Length: 199
Image 1: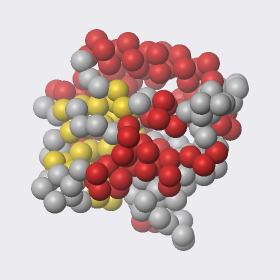
Image 2 (image 1 turned 30 degrees about the horizontal axis):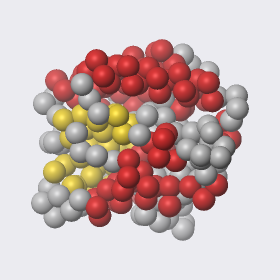
Image 3 (image 1 turned 90 degrees about the vertical axis):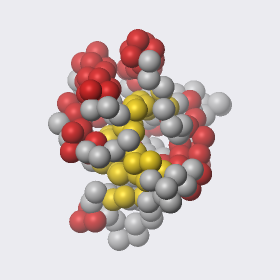
Image 4 (image 1 turned 180 degrees about the horizontal axis):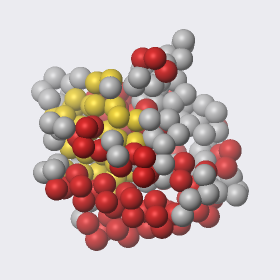
């Protein structure tokens, strides 16, 4: 696990898939990092720079579905103050039910609360390479996330809205994505500085 260390120490456990990990420019696992790894390719580094109290624990794993992410929650959240849950695009990419993905995300929110953590939930980004085929499913999952986040009284980090192109709805702006699947460094900067808020 890679820790982005702030000065005072509100420990934020960032749990998710490749978006949390920082793909394609970063991976929290040193064995999986690209040769030209750039730590600025993670929203956590930008959020920590904006709020020096924050100390992030990056628990992102490339390619994982929500059921796989959930299995890592307790280890990631140990001795944390805040849990940020992010995931769902790999469920969609693998043809899984968005309703099941939403229930997995809800269960993670509830588990975080059981552990005494403040919890926030990120919604699913636009997916340029999956557009238009996956667009309706992404919007459906984000709608379910909004509904249960309201029920559970947890904030939603607006990753989708932050990176959606005004001119081409359902996709990220070209300068905000590196490969059509993941944010660019500029995209991650926006997620960390604009979308991230402590719950």
